[in-house]
Image (tube, rainbow, N blue to C red; front, side, top):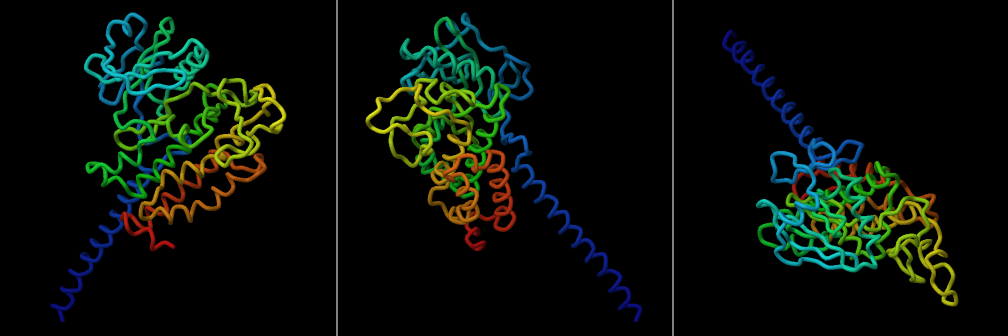
Length: 350
C-alpha cells in the first residue's frame, strides 16, 4: 500500500512538469507569432533607420548613424561602379561609399527635374522603416544616394525565389508577409507625416512592383517616390498620373479617361482622386502576384477573398482603408501560422 502511494506521489509532479512544459511551449509560440506580427502602426519587421536623429542614416550593415552626405561628399566619396537601372526620370548606378554598396540616382532629363526633386523631397520627409534609407543628396547636381538592395525590385521576386539558395524561402509564409509589408507601406503613405500620399505612378502591375525593393531578409521598402501627390490634387497634376486608357483592370475605373475617344487627353480634365480610388483597388492584384502558385497560397486567397472583393467595389467610397485591409491580412496570417505552422500543412484548413 505504501509503495502504491509513493508511486502515485511521484507521478503527480511528473504530470505537473509536463503541463508546465506544454504551457511554456505555448507561450514561446505566442511570443514568436507576436514578433512576426506588427503593431497597429504598421511597422515592418526591419527598422533599418534605427534611432538615428533627423538628417542622419544608418544602413543595415552600419553600427552607428552618420549625417546625410551633402554635395562635397557625394561628389568625392561616392564612386560609381555600373549602371543598374534607367527610367524616364533617373538613371541608377551601383556605387560604393566607404566600403558600403549604395545606389546613386541621377536625373535622366531636365524635362523631369520637377519629378526628381519631388521624389527627393518625399524621401527626406518620409524616412522611416517602410522607406529605402536615404544616404545623401546633391540637389545642385540632381543626384541622390540611397541604400543598395542586391535582390533588386519586387519585379525580380520569382527569379530570386527560384535561386537554389533562396528556395527555402519560397513558402506561403514568406509571400504572405510580403503582402503584409505592401499593405503596411500603403497605410504608412496614407497616414504619413507629409499628409495622405498616394502612389500615382502605378498604372500597371509591372510599374507598381518596380517601385518596391526586396530586402535581404525578404521584406519590402518603397523606393520610387517621384509621383506621390497628396490626396485632393487633380489626377494629372504630376506628369505620370493621367491614364489615357479607356478600359482596364489594374487601374480603378474612375481613374480611366472619362471623356471618350472624341476628347483629346488633357491632365487637367482628369477627375480628382483619393487613396481609395488608386491604391486600394490594386491590392488584390499585387497580392495575387506575391502569392504566386506556392503550396498554401490557395488557402490564403480563400481567407482573403472577402476583403479583396471589397477592395474592388465599383464605388470607391465603399472600399476599405489600408488599415482595414492590413488588419484582415494580419489576422489571416496569424490564423494560418497558428493552425498550420509547417509550409505544407495549410491546405488542411480548407
